[in-house]
Image (tube, rainbow, N blue to C red; front, side, top):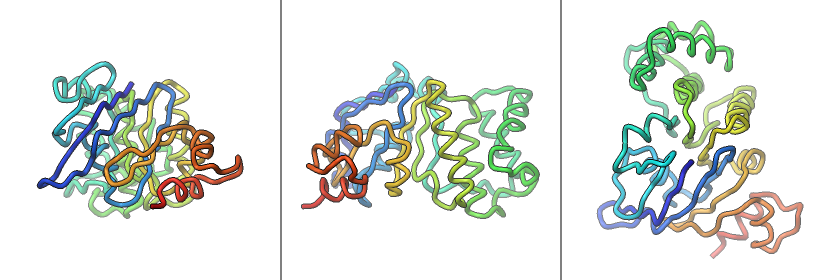
Length: 241
């Protein structure tokens, strides 16, 4: 579903991502973890086609992101770390706008919106202006927008920031249900318990370099920790020094 090969990106001569390679197959939740300024968001935005990479290749569903942007974007649902504010659009108008960008018919958009709104128990607020929503409700709408066109790959940067506990559980269930149906997820998060709970595999990024990739069991072995070690303990052991 997703193959990243030797990805490199600099900003004003400063290396943000350095020779990063990994792949995600259908049915996987792949978590990318690391400290601030480690390059995680740069990786996600590059896959989403929002940044032009300096070196390497990114393939999504068999298409090169740089050469076939329309084809790759059509199968990606992207949830940024900071929800966009769409002026005076209502939540419903925002979802219709996103659906139209993906070529969905008005009827299909309406059907999917009606289907998705109950997930977070927010049916009714879609008539209110998006800019007046709480941080949590903006995040909920952003998550629903990413699922609207029934993508094959979800890119999500800090999925539960701003969500109440009940909504965080809903978001996690949406991701696990999505992969159970054959979808793939790239999850960027600082919330290591969430990554530990739902990840199939985990990549550890530091200073733009991918230090290691594997299951939690693999990473425990690499860190020379026992089978009861948490991801937080593993992460600390692998990134110290």
